[in-house]
Amino acid sequence: MRSSEVATKAQVNVQTLRYYERRGLLAEPQRTSSGYRVYTPDAVQVVRFVKRAQQLGFTLDDIEDLLHLADGGPDSCQEAKAMARSRIADLQRRIEELAGMRDALARLVDTCDQPRRKRECPILHDIQTAATTTSTGRE
Image (cartoon, rainbow, N blue to C red; front, top):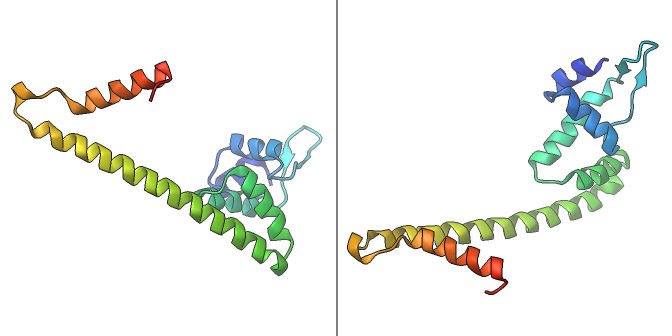
């Protein structure tokens, strides 16, 4: 199967296939005498596995481990479960950080309701203050 066919079936571009090869996620295919890559039929499945794992938030390093675990059979389930739990914890932290950011922005937006002559834009003031303290190393 040629690169373009694998890419089409896996819904990625050809450069993605080459990148996955360089990363070791996808086995380097054999080549024809004219230099064209010839993938095995399981290449589509591997690429789809990688893309689905990315959708679940796993890094490419994690995915490399998951691919090895997938080859290991049922005994690998506990390791995959541990990785998934770790990923859930990471996602929960990110959700909490994003919720905090949302709440801070909402508070800033709410202060914009003051009479015009009595206000300076708190959003711009907050961002400017943070930029100043970050650039000077003060907090």
